[in-house]
Length: 498
Image (tube, rainbow, N blue to C red):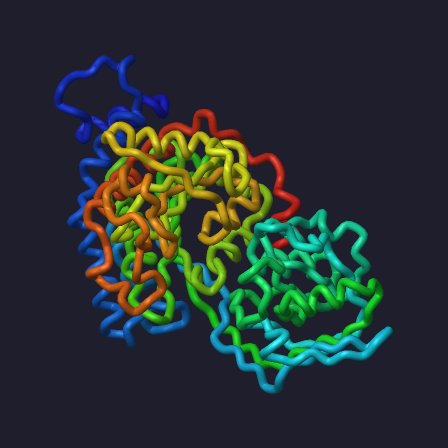
């Protein structure tokens, strides 16, 4: 039997440089990365963006989950992958097709004193809360009262916050640090019968407002209260509260699009993903047509190359509804299959008009914001930054803040990384010096708006980032050195699954 290296060398020779290079000087990952980068053209990526725009134009102006625009986007991507030679899997996932609150919600303390709070003023129902009617004691969860001068509460962010929580009680949780959906999921996992999250308490963070957290799977009624309500309920331990939500929830089915190389070690899988859906407001050409188009083009070109490690491409459904596609994918993996996923690369918004080249800070090397990712994430960060450095381009760090599809992988302990060019945030003067553009302006003025059209992307950023995606994917397809295997699930991740 010929060795794997010998086979790979033979297969890759048609794509190798014509100038002889000593074998000891360059590895297969170097040769393969160079060839793949050259084959991925920005113009071809842009052609996919034009296709996404045409799909939106023909389907009510968007490509949102549960719409004909998403279905057409799914079919377009699946068709391109099949043409390239991949076997394609359409994985069904559940999402919210409709949610209607049929009567106003109830939040009232019943003992030791009676007080009724005003719906749509002092509290709002979290969309899409399941229906429920619970009268139970409230139990505070790791509150910071009085609040700190700046937002910092971690109430409910970790499963450990619920140590000693009495199952059946209503959890009283404070806003801060992590997404609402994580707090709700942790409360449900601890046995809460309902959850009240109240605003944190700093100036500008006191009122209640309507909030869509996009996830119903905790299965318990959930409301968002103003700071004053939370403060009152926390002031008297053992307060009994009635919490009632009357709502109709209608679920539907969407599909993730999955394709993997026929070659490669199935025990060493590199995943490369981007969310395929837009928000209902618009076509979603930057968010996230850009990431989807770039990953699709890399997949098409990679079909022509051999690989040592299996590469699985994922186009996620319903990210904009709460990371539903990626969360349900990870939740469905057996522990053994999770262990086989050695790395996950995420590409969400890679062509913002006022872009910055942001690489996810896998090892928390900048020492600010969110914590490091799972072991091996720092290696992915270094791999990506090395590509930009080879082009003479700077990068800045981006936090794993849970806002994109890397979140479920990070929670499951899988090494992760990726590129991001900015959303509604404001470009700093330092970033303007590094990348050009306009300091003090949003990276993407059309973020989540109808104007996220074919005119709302930066062609330079799209081209450079498509090359960076190709380079990182190729290198990991041949070498996973310095990326350890995932050995155990993250306890917080298991609690969040709800």
